[in-house]
Length: 129
Picture 1 (cartoon, rainbow, N blue to C red):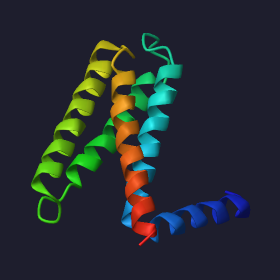
Picture 2: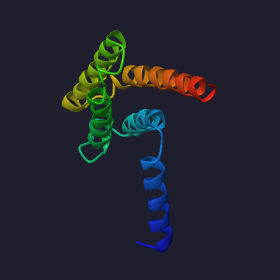
Picture 3: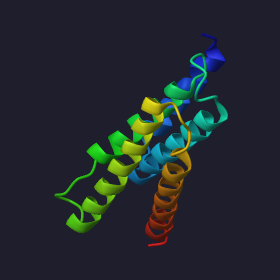
């Protein structure tokens, strides 16, 4: 690996490790949305495509977001609602992978995009304090 690539990797690693939690959550949403767009650009039925890989990556991010929910620190209603939304997304992504179809992806994207917008709003409010 070149020294430029090493420097870029070190910068990225440092920026993630030192990022506030809200920024990391936003980065996870952005990553999941990026994987979903990449999956949609692939042929779901072509076994040589990276469709399953992209769906699986998005699914892993959503599962991580769900597992990171903390009922002790958050409102039980909010945690329960987020849990249900994440489970919906995971179920839809499982359907994508089992049936090799991109049909459920737009619904998952809408949910994640709405949640990302909410987190953007929370970050703006918290930085304005």
